[in-house]
Length: 497
Image (cartoon, one colour):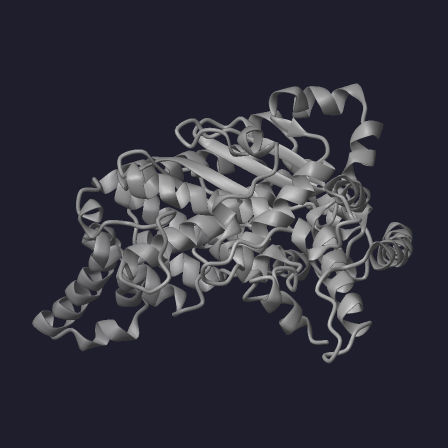
């Protein structure tokens, strides 16, 4: 018999257990995202008006990505109903671009090293987060009507006109260092942003004016005096060249600043020449003393982060939420717990995690819990995990898993139907037995995969001519035993890897 007929008999329009990844699961994103929560949801989500850090450890399939998507949806809803107290959302879940640039900056020797991630530091994370945030902010500012814009990063055009010169300068400096958009060339995009902010740069042309004026005066002196023999001496060239000394000095200084930024922002794509030309648009007074990421330290990044927050505040955002997920997926990590530790551990710093106005939501694989248990007193003093809303294990009870499966059934119900999980099974299968079975499966992903396999096995055991509309106890127990054995083998393989 066909599984479609089995589901239709129970009033179910689509298979509620066909998808396993929340990222691509339409049932979750369209229905369950607003009604199905893990018991630790309130602790992790917190209060958007007071952004706070949370650290979650969960095994594969426990719902970390689902929780991230739920937080995005709820934060967008908060922003739409609280336009004066919005939070800026940064999803830090795709590490591959940053790791690729990082390895490229370190050179070919680093690529061959298995311990390349040991050189990844906290300031690299801060650079990556600033890159995501600044790029999103600039993109929304330049193209406010672009499809796909969400409440987590929307900018009203009128707010840009209210920025004072120092705020506009800060945003332009942030864009110079961290805007990583590939939609257009960096100089063209930066120039478009400058015009959008109405930031005049003619003050920075004074040294060029001096150079042009000096050449013009020398040429005029030769023409007026008609002393053409003077051109055979070095003096006119020395005088004309001397008039360009201020421009050369400033250009040389900007070159070294640009070189420092390009070398130390190891997750960026900026070129020295393009960045130098942009920095030349600022006067010495505007750029002197400004923090720039030119050294291997966090001090400058904290200053840049505060500038970013100040700019966001002018655009109506009172806080920042950074969602960190999928740290086990980058190709450079490839599921290795040791490499995950090298990537993540530098973030476990209380000064960073408790930075005012910013909440870091770390959704981490449970394999890292072993490394947490091995750490010494100095690590715990630095990380202060007791203050970070730590959820040591994203565990699910059998009852909670039963509720999740039942919610998915209701979400996939046909018009006028009210299917229940219990009605899919024979009367000999009690609700208590189903809850006990789900408890052994531990996480939602395993429950969904098991129920899908169970329905397929049941339908394959009967024909269309003689259908059986309820799953028998024998089929439940046999499929559960096989699935548990297969999953144990997979788990052993993952641990070995």
